[in-house]
Amino acid sequence: MKILYGIQGTGNGHISRARTFIPMLKKFAEVDVLLSGTSSEVSLGSPVRYRVHGLGYTFGKKGGIDFIDSARKLRPVQLIRDIASLPVRDYDLVISDFEPVSARAAMRAGKMCIGLSHQAAFLSNRSPRPSHKSIIGEYIFRHYAPCSHYIGFHYQRYDRNIFTPVIGSEIRQLEKEQLVPSDSQQCLLAKTPGACLESAVKGNGNGSGSAWKPAPLTRRHAAVYLPSYDDKRLVPIFDQITHIDWHIFSKTAERPYRRGHVQVHPVDFSAYIKSLATCSWLVCGAGFETPSEALHLGKPIMAIPMAWQYEQQCNAAALKQMGVTVQTAVDRRFMDVISNWMERAETVKIDYPDQTEAVVARILNMYELEKTGTRFAV
Image 1: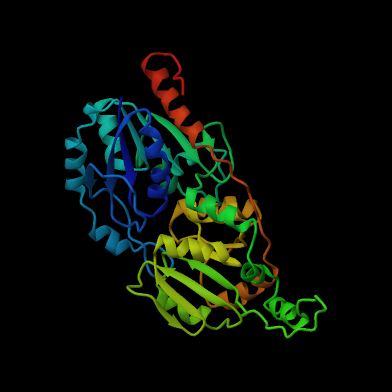
Image 2: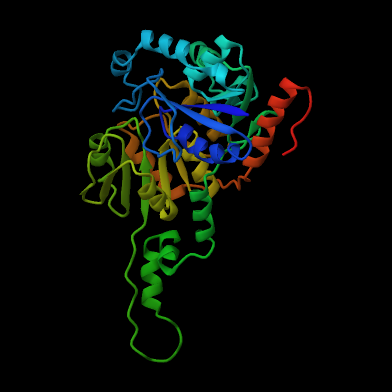
């Protein structure tokens, strides 16, 4: 059995999900990978057979999409050529994580194609939507990467063909490490920065009368991942809140630097998960994977959806239903909003089970039922 796995490269979530599924699929089939777009900072960890320009958008610097740069990067003729030249007839099954070239090539050749993506969850009307639906956004969900079959992922199982988020092994390992926090992590998890100082003043309480040396104080920090905002726009805002440190992970920063209480890092997965592991708050966009990981770890979240990005508006509606704080933008009122939120932030924790084997079984059963009318024994 040969599978072509098409991955959308706009953003990190598609690649993170593929990193989990490709090794499992390789236990049952030969898998070739197609990657379109180049906006991800996460390594796939598998060889890529086909690289195509695809059809994506560019993150802006003020909280939305950069429409001018997105239009400038359009290659409609190249897109048509890539679809026509992709040898999908060499494969038994095509899987598309919201990737248009592989999906449309499969449709053109009459090949079975399974949409394996977060966006596939929005083909169900049971998935939450904002109060004002977008006709264009709904059209994109259905026609950007059309497939013959669908398996979706969302924060909750809103429908039969929707699974809960794929939580990577690195994040699951963080959860295990957090079960027994170190002394410094206990300080990080304290409700107020003064709690660590208070424990230091009280001493060890062993009654020995020996001289006691306080442990170094560790300041709490918030992790910030807002890929549609320029770090130069964010730093002056967060630097005004000085009682904690801020770790900003920026798509536009070329090198790490520090200003006051704000540390800025170019997006790096390893550095990010270390910050996420010990952060007391997370400020992030309303993409799918980042809030999912934070929900799994039980981090207080403020989600800020990208402007003009309907998928994120839908995600924000779902997060709000679940009790997560949602803010519309980083604007003039943001300082007051985030200060109040940090004082009262509530944690929403969801222990997402590992459903990857069940998803792979669903994929193989879909294929066997389509081909022979029988189920695949996994």
